Length: 67
Image (cartoon, rainbow, N blue to C red; front, side):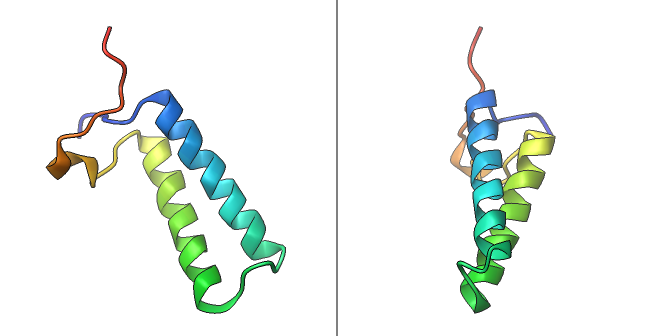
């Protein structure tokens, strides 16, 4: 797996993951929507940590800045 996520993309995903987790644990969203947001938060956090998004691969997208 080669990295295909730039720092801005990774930071944005981490921010969304934190927001989704806060919304869920604060009780703002509940039920099915809350669980979906929590799962998305986990996916965003995991892909940000490893720097690879599987969805970008078939779409041939890379957000890494060219030097």
